[in-house]
Image (tube, rainbow, N blue to C red):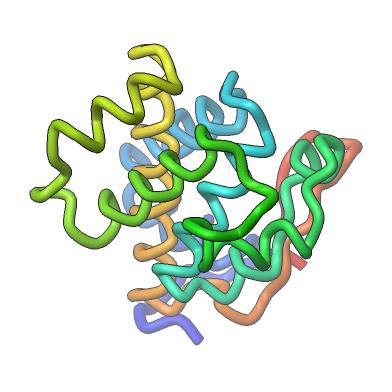
Length: 169
């Protein structure tokens, strides 16, 4: 249940909340579109998204899968390994360091040291690190935005093939 007064309508609560500040709604929409168009490998993208969802305890994100990740062969079993990424056998070294980076970004970003960045740079190009960081930031910020304001916490998300958009049901 939303913790703020929302405009009436059938749109998802997050859309109605953002309509209260149209300038921010446009910025969030642009950021969302950029993340949705990410050139990161979708398996990596989904693992990182799940790591953020676990940290945020976001009920919506924990239960949702991106269509691109499903197409990339990401399974529920693989996602269940995210909390134990250090020892889970099915992750690549790139995925492990990206999940570690995600964990630190979300919980203790001021203490991300040069050694972690060096390990990340051994796996990803600098432009990929920038993209990864922005993708993590988007999921972290919007997950917390929704959680703190109690938005759409009981809905489920589906991909609408007709519109090409994610919709709340």
